[in-house]
Image (cartoon, rainbow, N blue to C red):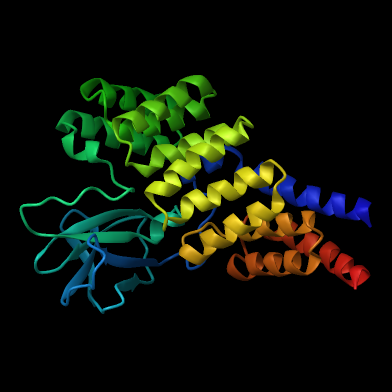
Amino acid sequence: MQRSLTRVAGTTRFVILAFLGAALLLDVPVSCQGSDNSIEGQVRVTTGGALPSGITVKLEVAEDVVVARKMVDQTGKFAFYNLTSEFYRVIVTAEGFQPASAQVDMQYYASRYPTLYLNPLGPKKTPPTPSESMTDLAAPKKARKEYQQGHAALEAKDLAGARRHFEEAIEADTCYARALTELGVALTLQGELSSAENSFQKAIHCDGEFLEPYIQLGILLDLEKKYSASESVLRRGLQLAPSDWQPYYRLGAVHQHSGKYKEAEEEYLQAISLSAAVPVEVHLRLADAYLQQKDYDQAYTEMQAYLRIAPDGPLAAQTRAMLQQVESMRKSNH
């Protein structure tokens, strides 16, 4: 039985990690799970109070080209279905509040679940949320333009082009935290890990309230098997954004890689409880954690959950094969 457990659990981890690999960086898409043609979002106010009445959400495919518009009820939730374009812009407006917007890339699972924060109008400015960087507001036009070109190149896997544009953006603004963060991602994918770490650290130094460099540095340290350092960085990010799913999900991965399977299980479950944007592969990660704890019933349940959500996902065939093995193990264990 122990030999079978090792074989099945090891296979699960190999499939997950071999497929995800460096795609963990910057949430490079592995697939579009769930409803591939929808955007489902949430509107909140930065003050944490009740939502105002009369919130309008509109969907654009290009600047000023509106394809859909709807009102939002007091839950703040909204959805657009049967979408056909690859990129969208979601804009939220309400009387007495500054407009909020988010770019949506339909190839990215998390991108399709945006949370938009409304800032009340008034002389007092509200600090950026952890997903925003205060240096975005200060960056000159040239820096922002170079960053946007670099971001597009990174998404197109043109690492040399992305790096060039990010470096140009940073030359125009040496403390542009978002550009520094994505430069770190490009450097990581090019194998220049030390330079990447320096870039992430500088981004944190420039804007200690910006969550993304903490996440990316945590991932890099995890890949380098510096588990203690990775956990420390991610917990600093968690202090910034205790209701964001990403630090929990990444902490789960760190614990899993370091053999702390119960801790990994707890972090993954916390991430799932916070957001529907957690990648569907979390169920396979949980299945692996349960297998390592010899909890075959829960492992089986998590594999079924993955197949229910992503029946045609990139890991569906392997998961179905492993599901049969785990079913046999369940029966032998009872």
